[in-house]
Structure formats: C-alpha cells, structure tokens
Length: 467
Ligand code: B12
Ligand code: SF4
Image (cartoon, rainbow, N blue to C red; front, top):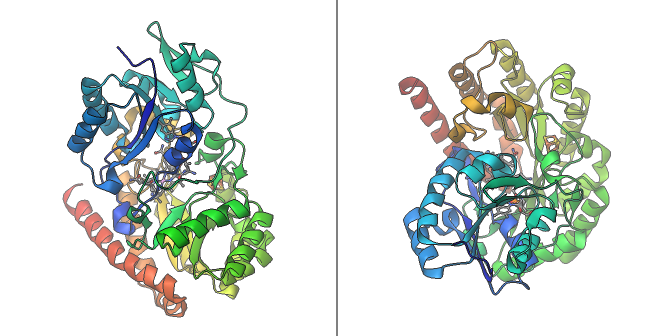
C-alpha cells in the first residue's frame, strides 16, 4: 500500500557513474532543483531532507540503509539520460524496502515519462516542478485527483494519465536555506571548498535545434541582481566561498540586471572571482556591461560558438553570425576577459574536411579554452526521437560520440576530436595566450591541462584497445 499522507520528503541525487567530465576538472554542483523545491514545500511538510550521493560519497547500499531507517513518505529522484537506467535498477531495490510514494523529475524523465512509469515511478513532475510538486503533495494528502495539476504524470486504475503542460512555468526564488546541504562539499573545476557553482535563471530566448533548454524551461526568467547578490554575499560570508561559476544558460540575457549586479559586486569590496556563460551576440550588444564585469571580478566567459560558417550556424538555428563571433572575441580580448569557446562537431554531413575547418576556426579565434562536443541526441530534440531506439543511454555524456555522420563512423569522429584537442593545446599561439592570461585563469588552465592530458591518454587507449 502506497502512503496516502505525506509529512516527510527525501530528495535523492542517486549515485552516478563517471561520465568523462571528471577528466576535464569535473565538479559537484549543488542540487539546486531540490533546494528550490524544498523552499516551496517547507511550510507544508514536517521534514524535508536531501541525500546527495555523489557529493556525500554515499553508495547505493548505504542509501538503501538510510531510506530503510528514515522511511520518508515521499521520495523524489531526478535523473539525466546517461545514468537513468541505473536509477531504474535502484528504484526496484528502493521499492522493496519502503512504501513511500516515488516521484521523478528532471531532464530525462520529463520527456521519457512513459518509460519512467514503466520502470517503477509512481508519478512524474515534468519540467519546472515548483508548482506541480506542492500541488501533487496536497492532492495526495486530501485524497483528490491530481488530474487538474499541470505537468504531472500519474497512474489511475492502471492507466498512465498525463496532464496538460503548464502555460506558465512558475517563478524562481532565491535559495534562502543552505542548511539542507553542506556547501563545502560543492565545487567546480578547482576542487576547493572556496568555490561553488550557482544557478540564477531559467531558460533561454533562442531555439537552437540541438538544445532542449528553451522548451524545457518555457518562459525565460531570472533572479534580480539584489537576489543574486544576497546569495553570493551569504556564501561569501558564511561559507567562505570566493569563486563562483554561474551555470545559467545565458547569464547576460538581461543587461540591466547584469550591470546592477556588477555595481553591487564592485561596491561590496568582496574579493571574488566569477565566470559565466552567454551568447556572442550578447557580448556585442552589452559591451559596456562586459567591461564593467571585468572590474567586478569576472575572470572567464563560456561562449557557444558552435561552428565556422554562417550556413552551418543557420542549420543549427543558432541566430548568430561569424562576424558577430569574431567581434565578440575582439571585445573580450580587449578587456582581458579569457574565454572558453564551445564547438559542436559531427553534423550529419560532416567528414574530415568539416572537422578540419572547425579546428582552423577555433585556432584562429584562439580562446584560452576550447571544447569540441559531438552532436548528441538529447531527450526533447528531434535528433533524440529519430535515434532513441538504438541509443546506448550511458553514452549521452556530451563527451562520447554517439552518432556517426554520413561520412564518418562514430569511432573515427572521436579519434579526430581527440587529435583536434591535442593540436589545439600544443600550438605556440595557445601558449602565448596562456602566458598573458590573468593568474586565476592560468591556474584553471594548468589544472585542466593535467586532467585533460589524462583524458587524452584514456581516449587514445580506448581508440587502440576497445575499437
Ligand atoms: C550545472 C549543470 C551541470 C554541472 C553540474 C552537474 C551536476 N552534477 O549537478 C556540470 C557542468 C558539472 C554538468 C555536467 C553534466 N551535464 Co549538466 N547541466 C547543468 C545545467 C546547466 C544546470 C543545472 C541546474 O542547476 N539547473 C537549475 C535547477 C533549478 O534545475 P533542475 O535541477 O533541473 O531542477 C528543476 C526541474 O528540472 C525539476 N526537477 C529536477 N529533478 C527533479 C526531481 C524531482 C523528484 C522533481 C519532482 C523535480 C525535479 O524541478 C526543479 C525545479 O524546477 C543544466 C541545464 C539547465 N539549464 O538546467 C545541464 C544539464 C542538466 N546537463 C546535462 C548533461 C548532459 C550533463 C553531462 C552528462 C554532460 C556535460 N558535459 O555537460 C554532465 C553530467 C554530470 C553529472 N555527473 O551529473 C543535460 C542533461 C540532458 C539529459 N537529458 O541528459 C542538461 C539538461 C543540459 C543540456 N545539454 O541539455 N552539468
Ligand atoms: S543559445 Fe544556448 S541555451 Fe539557448 S537555445 Fe541555443 S544552445 Fe540552448
């Protein structure tokens, strides 16, 4: 018998296998989804806890013991594609020791909800769950049907019922309560308790066709500058954080907020450094704000450059041009803000010539850091729908090559990417750039150089022995 009164909720980040990212520095991102949901339900529920297995180094066996001891009324588990099958296996073991209601959510389960229901979930809150999860808990407690709640999947008399998608995706609130986790366990790139990644917005206003984020998050929305500043100040004063990475999909989406945040950082006198990701067009449109950002502690920017020609940018529906990419590079070079240019390779018609062109364009831009990501089918994209039946989920890591192109096998693509990395990071121009970079960016690249070399060696070994 499943629980019919919910007074305790346990959110679980399940143990995850390695995904390749560890070699590139890795990171343990605070479970923002769960912190946000905890904020929304805390007044309604007697006890809310978060068990973050990777960050707390909890094995599946120990997790089961914790669940058996605590016996929460509702268990919330999220998953992304590459480890979702492990989550399904874990679920079977959890169900054997508890009659808690098991609710899922997050990027994979929101799209593949039927698969999730077939694999043991009792309900799914699709996409942003700030509205749906509290409403679902209410409906369980009142014994009413969740049929009117937007964005929910549940079972009724054996049938899987999928409610409408919410018109509005819910507001976002700042994290006020860090007590549910231990912030010292979270870090990015430099494994140090003094740094942390932060997420302060939802969504993006563009619609690149390899990306699901605009569809996933719906309306684009962000915290105000004052709210972000309050979170940073708290993490700085109470938890000793000094270095922040903003993981927002487009941190510069609203230049007013961005400028105001820079002003608050400068006036506060806090000795902080921070990095962020944005679009090249945003750099051009808001170049004054970017200049201010450097003074406010910005030390790295991640730009989605993707590819080398306007035709190819058009095919990805990227809505930027090559001249904008080059202009953006000029602006950030001038103010001394190092960049990490991210490229996509392995488009359907790609062969060695197209990869070589990508490499040449990357080398011409000569950013301090570069990544060449193989085009990967992600749930929510057409590419996923076309290929999902044949896909090994565990390879959806944005590191492994999943699809061959019309002209290259997946293995050949992976070998070419490895070679592109080796060439990129051994060029004299790269070393010149490195020597002129600000100290913190240099430190970051030094670390990445060591871990990246291990990645290259492992890929080389895999190419030799496993294929
Ligand atoms: C920060 C981030 C990272 C960080 C930290 C990852 C980590 N371990 O936590 C880094 C850079 C290390 C990283 C790595 C990877 N990431 Co990442 N990452 C993100 C990013 C940008 C933000 C996550 C975030 O904080 N979101 C904000 C919070 C509030 O949202 P949320 O956690 O999703 O939760 C909300 C809802 O989704 C929902 N929800 C989520 N879970 C649950 C569970 C329950 C029970 C309920 C009810 C609701 C619910 O409710 C929450 C509130 O509304 C997202 C993209 C995005 N914008 O979301 C990609 C994203 C999650 N990453 C993705 C991927 C693929 C990866 C990698 C595999 C590859 C890579 N190189 O990026 C690795 C895997 C690492 C790992 N072991 O998990 C994909 C996942 C797609 C998929 N279907 O698999 C995303 C969606 C980006 C994309 N390309 O589409 N990532
Ligand atoms: S700009 Fe970035 S986040 Fe926005 S749709 Fe394109 S790839 Fe996705």
